[in-house]
Length: 89
Image (tube, rainbow, N blue to C red; front, side):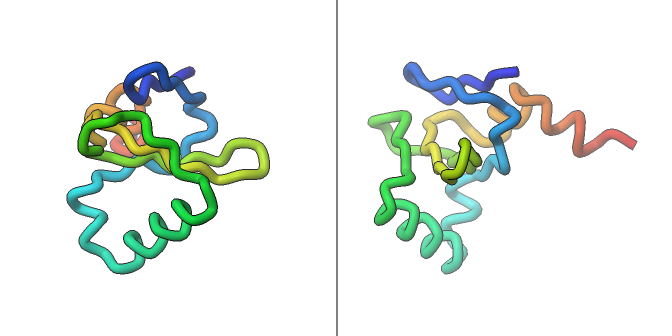
């Protein structure tokens, strides 16, 4: 299955490690450090020219990529079906 991240960007859901809300996670020093390091290594893909609301961490082949999206994390999770997996008994 594929997940639309905005603009013209679509990723395979099998590559997704996690979907994160930027407002909640950017308060953590470790998350900010992780995103800075990813930026330095050229692993950030900016899907939007607007202020991003979420980021999606993916493992593609041998590289980790971080996609910044203007779509809310909750919306992306619903689209990907992660909520069903997390709440299943």
